[in-house]
Length: 184
Image (cartoon, rainbow, N blue to C red):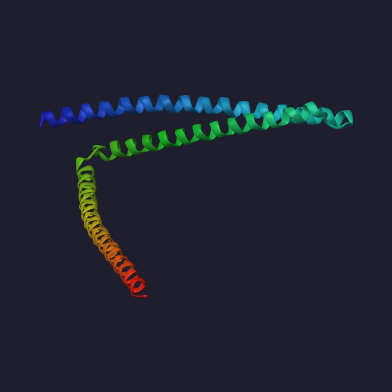
């Protein structure tokens, strides 16, 4: 009985350490997201500032402003994509954190071997059936090759026979022409 209580305590400590690590990683991602958000805000302000200067001057933007705009757009897009990736990573960490907290609250161990074993067995049965199908297809292909080879040899033999027959008929034709000319 004491072994199981010790094991439960050990598992609880391990989960607590993991949760602390995940919490630290989540805080780091939140900080990175905040920095990216600040960069995006700064980019928006930087993009709006030249337009305000141009409208205040009453003129139109020159070619330099047009060249700078695509660069800003690309930089903004890269920052936006990076921000979305960080948010996705943060959501993943938080979902794992919630799952582990739920498991602790329920007193369950997170990694049951039974579902993994069932999936493994199902996969092995599927792989076995695919191997059997591949073997059957290989056998069908061997038979098709054999039939094709047999057909090729039959055609080749028939061709040789026809060539021989043609040669003999030509010889007979030439003999009959010679005898016809001799009789004339």
